[in-house]
Length: 122
Image (cartoon, rainbow, N blue to C red; front, side, top):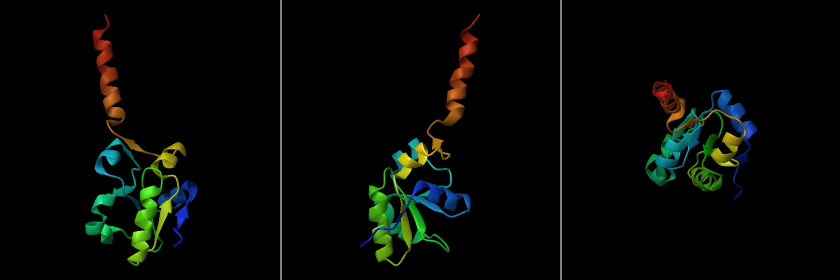
């Protein structure tokens, strides 16, 4: 069976147009870094939650770390009658493309540490 795959540029175009993006990594990976537009549906919960994945009028976009898990999830969704595509290169390629991401701690944590520095200066 051919796995349908789209590149990062196409995935970003679709997300910018309002298409949903489903991240199938686990919670810890999501907490570390994720696309702000994505919805987390961990692969480990797919059996219970696959019906939440819906791309609307386009195939659902599925992303993981580098593309392996999303390809397996897309195959399972397609077998269940849910049109889906895997985002080639996963979050690694997403981040390298310059797309917006949310990181653990975010800028607020770094800012808080920087703000406390001047207090020690005289």
